[in-house]
Length: 103
Image (tube, rainbow, N blue to C red):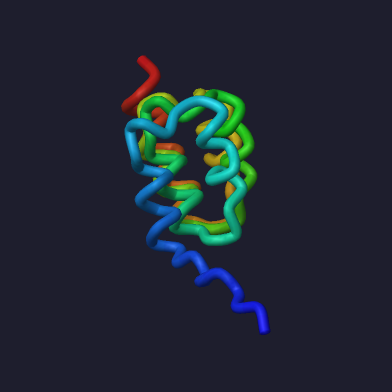
């Protein structure tokens, strides 16, 4: 009987998403990971590829969107779009970022 490989724990993927040696296109699989904490780890990275930041702006998880709004590299177009988000906390954070971050 074949044994299955051990299931990867999402925390392992969070660590990989935060690993400074994982860069550029190697981050992309983590930007679309099924676990929000992994996507949030990518969204928080200052070296996250711009395309991934834009894509993460469409995420439905508040944790991911909060990480994105804290990232200084998140494009202003993404922040502006999030200012109209249906979640008041996300909307408020985006409006605050627009007021403070793009002068």
